Image (tube, rainbow, N blue to C red; front, side):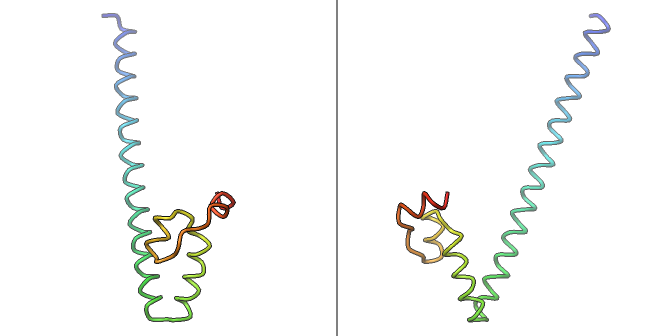
Length: 89
């Protein structure tokens, strides 16, 4: 095997390891981001239980923000009419 071919193979192996480590890092960052969102959401929902004014404001924001039927259903909101969905997207 020529020296050049061996070096190219080594470079490819290193590049594969770099990509693998980058993917691990991205996955870890996504998990952390998801955990932050869950904890922030739990905090906000607990706050809404204790504060009626905040609860009303949160519900108003959710009505504007949530456009997917499944998401709206989680909060007891009716589906958006078809026209509003296409305008929101």
